[in-house]
Length: 505
Ligand code: F6P
Image 1 (tube, rainbow, N blue to C red):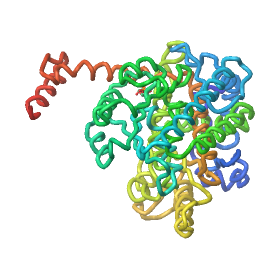
Image 2 (image 1 turned 45 degrees about the vertical axis):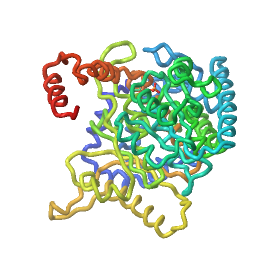
Image 3 (image 1 turned 90 degrees about the vertical axis):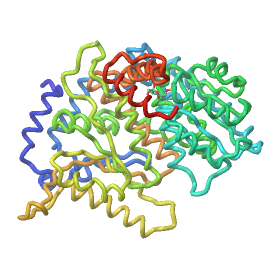
Image 4 (image 1 turned 30 degrees about the vertical axis):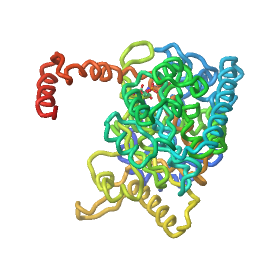
């Protein structure tokens, strides 16, 4: 039988009248048999709404789409980014799992760059610098910001690292307030070095510092970085075309991570990711966590038609994970063009969103329990806490377990206002502890799941042409906002007139 995406709906229809609680009641072994673990990561898919027959169809789909071969092509540095004719070799930044020469070369280049990162950090540590401002946006910000925040100790280490991304001047003003230019160094992170936000904020920082002496850059366009900000070559670290921005935290883009946490923990992060990479590359489709996670996403999107996907973290230290995943998943999979230029006939990415539990339970969980739309969730928790408040951790875990159960099983009531329909799916993701290794593995899992989803949907996970139009229009509108010309679009023109008329001159 040909298991295409549309045929998954046959299974969804077959299961339509079977409540999720019934699925589990009639097959109690799925509680443990639909769980998968690797290293510090544990995933339980028992509360997804597929039964074993539907799951077999999903796995068959992965086989037919040759997901294993696609994974090998990724690791071997083949041009999986077909629209830009490039490899996507983020796995080579952290491990040596491929014998392809291009991947081995990339791995060696990345290691040499890490040696330069370590030297640079040692150099800065021997100065009076106390604060680092990392300037970058999107992939040059969200990953480093997430990791530095998730793994930081309660008190800052050698450096306090601040992140500045938004072009809104209020962000720069607030970041710099309280910092001493004589004790602050700057890292400008931009793959292209043509990003408006980073160039403008970089210029603010240069003027604030009074010179470029303590400005560093990370870029795949090092010449431009050095020239634009007059940065000495020894303070410019490379990245490469073969790493996508949102997959780049493992490269020198992770310099702010290493400055915040130390090089050892940065290496630990890479080691954790590399360990998961091996699993993603070698485990067969039926036992592969990234593949299962991707198939679950496809089930929820294409078989059931769920338009959004939530990620709720029951670990405050992971509070930035939803924002990071929004870029990783939605910039990668927000496509309507197939690899061959055709148009997708099935939906691709849902809207990803989320927040940190238990806070979210007191804001929007009402809608998740009783709203008309169903939002499949990834629920992420950490088994061991590192704070001294054991009772709070038990409370956090009890809430995590309770929410998953309530969403799945619901509760009958004759009073419709008090009834919980249940049938709301979730995947439980547990980390043994939050360490560089486990976080590296978790992020790598999401990267691989995204790639597998792109293979299943036949789209390119590594370009982002959809963000270009807005960028072009924005820079084209600068003269209109400066009163030098009129905007061409009539609605934009009216809005520019309003802005210009009411802005203090
Ligand atoms: O928003 C588009 C984008 O190109 C992202 O893909 C990228 O991570 C971000 O802008 C920043 O780009 P750069 O690192 O080139 O400044």
